[in-house]
Image (tube, rainbow, N blue to C red; front, side, top):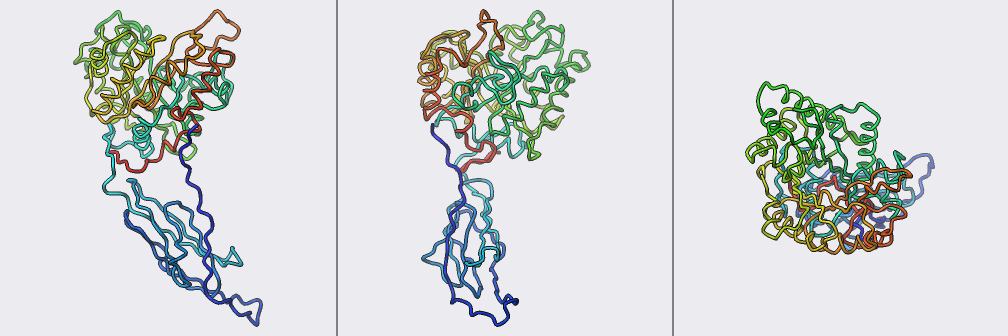
Length: 482
């Protein structure tokens, strides 16, 4: 499995300098002197070297805790340390600490900090929906784009909450049971949190597993099967074509009810913080599969203008009114039958809300055991993502109750190899206990016939699981998000 590079501390580099100090006549008097000039420094983004003056009356060693700056022993002297510096390709500053210590007494030392300026001309600039998004959210946005073309993150819906034969066992995962690693993407449904807040045992579980995924550095992807706020039924109730128009209309009870749901969602997002106290970024896809007729926000119940207005209304309310700045907004039309290249291309941007209102381009694919169709959809998605300069991915996928032993290599890995999508997220494995007649599963689990093939995909350099991910919440080098 290919691993992203990990920055390690540079090995201790030693410069012997000066003559050995003469023994002091009074052993209790410390006559050592050590001064560093400067004590704090800033270097340009394109600097190639940095010089540190040292005044010491003893032999000393120098160490540095970053990989972008290194001691040049051949150019250093007993009074001046010269460091080579790499250009900063990132749009964030970076800082290193240089420590100079007595060669025979490492506890006697002084340190200084050197900061390198940001790159004013990054290689890639991306446009984000929320200009006030948190630093971690902007970094996630850039990393999603950066991974595209290098490989794809494997994801699974509700994977950390339950599996086919287990329920709410902290630390467990059907994926991990098979390959020993967690998915790179954890998909979760936030509809009941929007409706009820964080009340109830299931919503508490949702919160817990989201935070667990974030602590491991995984990506959080959220769908919302929202109830119908007009009829009171579920999200598949398409009996009324006036739901969205009622939400968009000032003063209606439907609008008031729906805004309360968005208030609950905002409160949850603004209280969702990692162990460092930072808000947890979430890729939110609020009105998924809008190309289809079955949902109250779908093609049957809305006009094109209504859907676009509804999407913008939701983004504006969460971002501007409620001040939620840890969401990325993802659209995800459905691709589940055979479509020609032209048809697939058109469905990707069906009822497009505008480039300034979409961060992530997704597709929900239930193409069955048809890798050729999957390839067509992925190519269409990749094409649009390149045109619009946005990250993209397969936000739902799978074949219910599949038994094909080589499913993963033939239906997932090979079609997506070398394309732009940064993720493929399988739908859930329903918890069934001992009820083997219930075949509602879309991914691997212990005992499934495709276990070995799944491990083959796991070992492939283009599949990224939890341990393969870079720091998804730190801006990658060469990127700017505006």
